[in-house]
Length: 147
Image 1 (cartoon, rainbow, N blue to C red):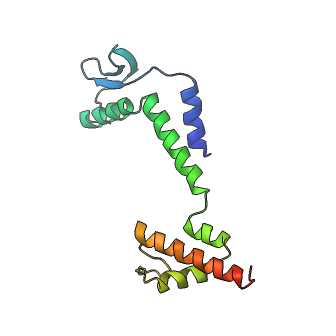
Image 2 (image 1 turned 135 degrees about the vertical axis):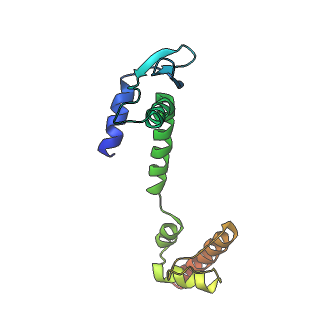
């Protein structure tokens, strides 16, 4: 976990004011809604910040209530967990196929190759055909006694 995420998690553990939040331009603050309990005060325009920048800052703060940030962190954690699972090439590799064999199989299946050699554009049907062909190859290899 990066330091940035750790700081966010620690801040959320402090139980900030529940959301949703909204900018209250009349009071120059971000309020919890519907209670209008102030979350933070905004420094309205100065010689160093325009009204548009102040409004944008307030909108960003209001959009980042803790429920939204928790949901984003949950999505991020789920995506990160899925990245550790082997993709199709990883699964085929576990079946005893080298990357060269996977590329050769994809070419034999007529899958469209991108400008980058060995990288293919595939849809779900193509992927299904590739996995099925790899399964047949893996079976044939096992039958021949090669592991």
